[in-house]
Amino acid sequence: MEDIRDIIKNALNDIAKTQWMIRPGGFPSISFRIISEKGSVFTTSGEVETEFFIQVDIWTKKDIDHVNISKLVKQKLMFLDFSRPSETEDFENDTKIFHRIQRYYYLKDNESEVMT
Image (cartoon, rainbow, N blue to C red; front, side, top):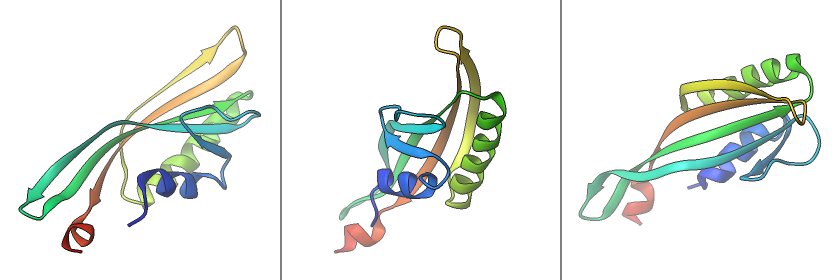
């Protein structure tokens, strides 16, 4: 099964340059990180389901860009069964960067991996 990092990067890379943990150079860009990962269902064979809490950061120089990119990110990730429990935004006065923070929940089914 595909790694969670690959799932997110593949889904978002066509929206803006996307990178794990570190904000990519240039604007607009997207970075993401795993805030929490834990097993949620176990059998004698192992961990059947894994819960992930993911943070996606959208970085832009234009106000309208972060609004539009945010909508695209939501559409892509929710299509892949991520749920979005929270979202906030910030404007960094010193750098003049718009920063939108989205948090998502994702439940990964590991059953096929456990059975092999």
